Length: 113
Length: 111
Image (cartoon, rainbow over all chains, first blue to last red; front, side, top):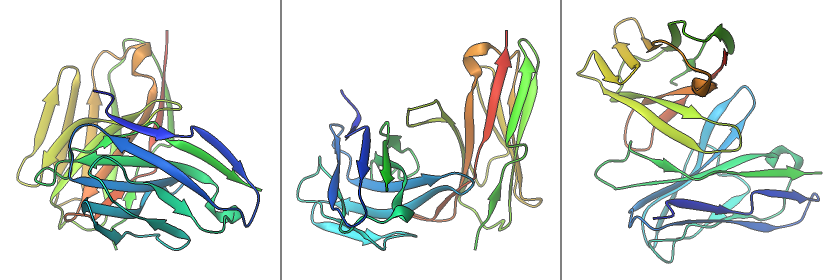
């Protein structure tokens, strides 16, 4: 099993550009989520999904969109990048009956200039 | 709103020393508390999960304790090794999607 994979590992964007961060898991997990990690602030939940076709907002959803068309994939879209979105982004997944046993991807380091 | 604090932010110890990492939280109405390890450029790896009804969990050289009434958890690492060098995060579970992470303690074990 590859576990949770994320692409790209690094990305530099200019303000106003859009992009999609990819996340995939091969463990047949129902629950998937996106976090951002900023210095001095801990991980914060952006969006999550409890299954294909179902998504909901987390703590800091503004400026991000998600969709879940398959169990395996959960892409995160930045609509119009802003310097405040410079961060490290982590995708995680788990079985719905064990939501705290999350498996994390290696992260995407995004810089917005 | 739950707040999770980890002090110190960084810690450096010689190899072989026993050490304790601290985590404190403001709201004692929690479901569980989890300790993670994060290596540079990598994701988070779960180390120990303590349910709210438990007082401690052990895995190898690691022991995590939970005192809900005082809002504190500790992660004890015995006989530290250079391979233990990483950032350690605690995360407090307040419900299905309500997980609050601390900012972490960066541990360096010096050979």
